[in-house]
Length: 471
Image (cartoon, rainbow, N blue to C red):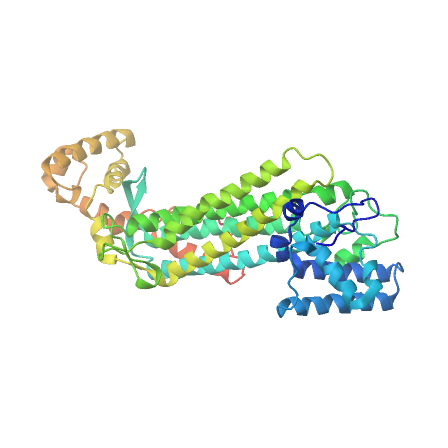
């Protein structure tokens, strides 16, 4: 640290070493360096465009900034804590490279609008990358769904066997969750893609800048209409972390099912060696580490959302140093969501195998076809509630006798109600139970085929030709 912190001649002494360390953000905001360089290049070009600096000065600044970019990428620019933050580090290195003209870069700009610009450029790119990760995850779901359209799996409510469904239908439910995540991030991207550059510290600037020109260079769609709002707004970061939390909710729900399905009690899937670990003392075990970690990391992302909300709730206008705390939460939230999406995509693609024989047996060994018995009677004119009560009685008596509904004789059925005929056995066969649920969005095979076509069209970036919305 230099003997004197050169903020301005307003200060005579230097910072206490503990405060230097406490105040510094270079340890984490170095993540923004490429975006800071890109934003600074646009700012330099705008200064020349508006005549605030000469074209030659702008060229010198741009050349120096690009040199810093190359130095950073090759590992030759590694600013330390004495640089305080990435913005000062870049400006100081620029002045070393190009001389005093480097000191002109900060004309008509404050660190407040500078960091606001950097973080938006960063998050815009991360949103694009995460949306692609979602597409990869969806593709892995579709691949399984194609292979298991007519594979049956028990459907559950309250974690109790409810009705048999198509395994593809189950997997495509997660596709739809992910599609909402993809859409939500697209909406948030639009509200992220607004330029605060030129808002200054809080009140704009006296220089004749052109905020729209620099915004256009950076591919921002709009500029902030109010300078106070521009430097202090972090709604976009909170919105992103909200969307990230919902992504993690969806991944965590799927993770919980994978954990259950891989247990001996369910035994619906087998974990491959590529995505499972063993026990240090129990040689027979194969542990579902990937979904367990995803389930655990979900709370981490939730925590970052709560941290950002708490950070913002009491801040007066405009910029406050508290906002330095937004970055670590945002950076870690981005990284956590991305690695969890990647890990779950790999798990789906190479880490699990569905045990189709076990699934076939599972849907044939319970009373999940009871509703279809009631529907059978209702189709013959019996009021549904009366049919419902009759079937409740037969389930109770069958349980007492150790029988399933398929084991009842036709005589036993007709003793329950004369409307039963020999076709009851076809009506309650698991495959027919699933096929019959052909209402829009249901688990019937025709509906699932249609849903699969729709999902593939989304992945192919084509609109699905239907007047009915996808959810």
